[in-house]
Length: 162
Image (tube, rainbow, N blue to C red; front, side, top):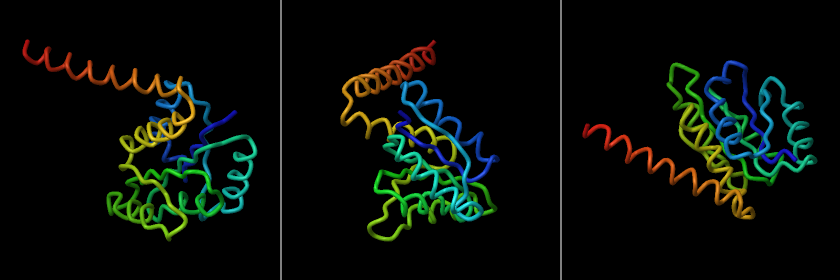
């Protein structure tokens, strides 16, 4: 069962969004990543949401730049959690995408993370934490990953001491 759907607005977003899929894969969370546009393919977007829900999708992650309406368009079609990744795809360096993603009308929330690759990673971690509310094995994987992150920092500090 696909638990997480990752939508991006354009093929040019792939390099920025790929880290999201990598984190989900490392945690063994089934996911699907595809391209759909709130503006260019609104019917495809609506159909993808319905199809993914029918397949058991629990969380939607949407990455878009500029007007960044993809997460909002998905939130309008589902009551499942939607996480938005704003992308720096214009001369405004992502401010336009960030504001478009966080400024949702009441009742249609989009949990918004940081821009670009850091946001993509955190979107996956947030999705994992939501899923871990009902999955103790996944919660244990997240705890183990955090312990590794802490050890990596400690190791780097020791290496710096030389």
